[in-house]
Length: 174
Ligand code: FEO
Image (cartoon, rainbow, N blue to C red; front, side):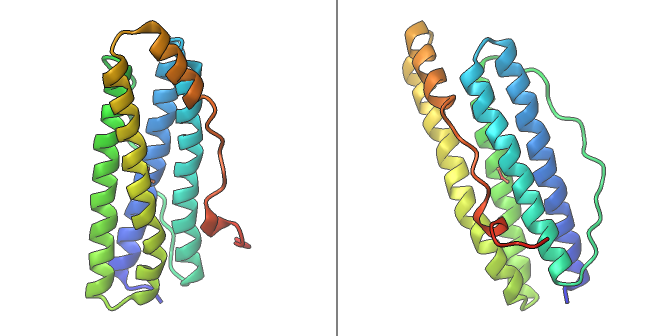
């Protein structure tokens, strides 16, 4: 059984993950507009990953006999100054998500909720990867600057990203 505090915090996290999904889809639209189909694809894969993150939490609340409460998803930005601005915004956003996950982890410690802690470990590791991915692309863009060929090559590389369902969903019957 989940405590009310944990249930509320996980429901807030579900909303944050859905907002993230919406943000990445908006970024994909912007990248398409800028003619960067590879970067758009990268963001579309991330859009799917974020929905997985929300679903992992959704499934967990149900497994623990809790109540999932879906709240409205707030509007997301639709304009960025540049491609670099997109990926810098991603890093900033993922750092905020990491802070939310850490807070949730700390709350589960306070509440002696070890099952929630165990479930959250996957998210702790995932956030390391999410921040690293954004940072790598920022580093590449900073190196390339306005070099058209460099942008072309990076766009090709990012377009090769393939969606893979998040591991915690693999054996789920929910
Ligand atoms: Fe679900 Fe990108 O954090």
